[in-house]
Image: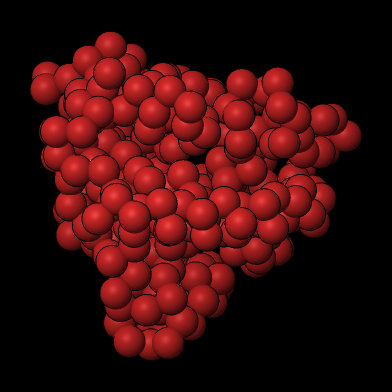
Length: 286
């Protein structure tokens, strides 16, 4: 059992939790994910690792209410325990294999959309510790949906906030901000985009004319997290890969985004039905 030792809501629908998991905290790396189960009969839920504290033995997760299982997770409180909290899983970010000397001479830009800000955070934190130069673009629907702004701002050289409705930061899409920076002549050795599939697709289309190396995370495709269910199967170049075991990060220019988005939409009807039952169950508990 894995105890929740800290919890706060970043927005009304997004919860951050610190969970006691000493072994995972010691081995976790940026880019990896974990699997949680609320109870013994619960669904296996893949969540990206937002942070880890090796000294305290805790791992931080960020969960947004989008369906039945995520609603159950966000309903948990400090002191509650997860039945399963397994990981770290997946391949870590490529840059962890580079030396401090190499990373300190490079400049990175991260494009985070919505909840994608959470998995961007440990990567930025790691690169900051290595002396790299980092710019970050965070996109959200509105001011209330911007998360981890203060934490991210303390680690990067430049932080750009974009909101769809203009209620905070710059009004517009993250792709517009990225294009503006590239048009101004800003040079980056590597870009990383994490967020909704459609956002990553258009970030890829925006970056391609500038020959900007770009990685994207296909973590939103994962279901089982082991490669056995086949739900996260996707075409990368001329190969078939699984986001959970081969990724979740891939070369953006090789990803078949249209195929990935079709696959992602397969379970929406079932998830809506399950979430409706979950809402009724939680209401009956009160």
